[in-house]
Image 1 (cartoon, rainbow, N blue to C red):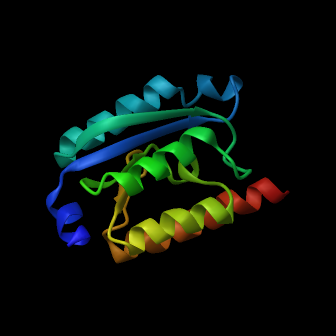
Image 2: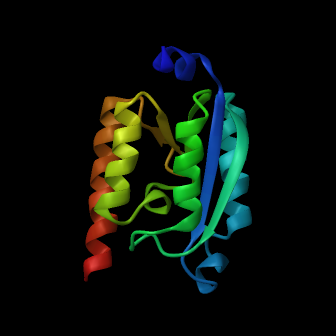
Image 3: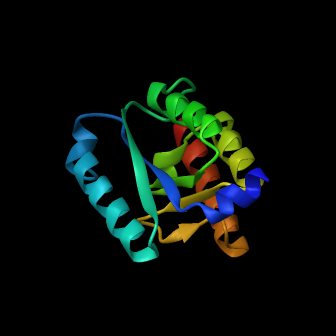
Length: 140
């Protein structure tokens, strides 16, 4: 029943993140949000709530990410999350596994700038690769 609701719903959360003030210059929160909204408009997805984070995704414990995950579990009418890019979603295996569990539960993960989503098997392979690269670069 829960998967039927998610699949019939058109409601999504949007999540934007920067690690540092300096990073805002290249991929500002406003620019990320603009691209996410353009993507949602093109795909006819309805963004019902936005979450904004100014914290690295390398370490576990992002406040807004945790809040979003909690709200997602409460509201069974949310179909998924739209991120700016794969590396804006998670840079540590723990958070990546949480997102993978969402995908396996029937939620959709969309990555606006990358133009990919978790509903496509080939795209999911690319998401795994990009998550691996994002995690690796946090270790060196």
